[in-house]
Amino acid sequence: MSKIYKVLCIGETTVLFSYVTPVIVHTSGSAPKITEKKYSATTTKHINKFLRENDFSKDRCNFVSQEEINFLTDKELVKKLSA
Image (cartoon, rainbow, N blue to C red; front, side, top):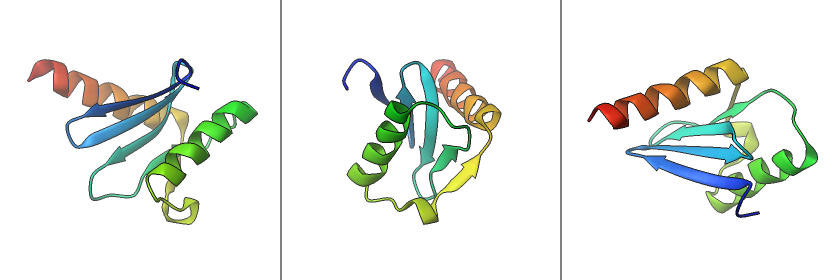
């Protein structure tokens, strides 16, 4: 899974990428945001692996549009690069 499962930590925010697509954004102290878009079975496995490894339950996550995941990821990257 290493080449297609990437976790990027940006300050207090963690982003899970499946292949090259961000699918989870989690900021410390808040519920993870998971894309509501359905991708491949492998991406679903990546999401479940991330949740399991970080002791998150799907019923405590927020499901949001892929556009929101993209926006949040871009916002965090810009913030980090501007620092």
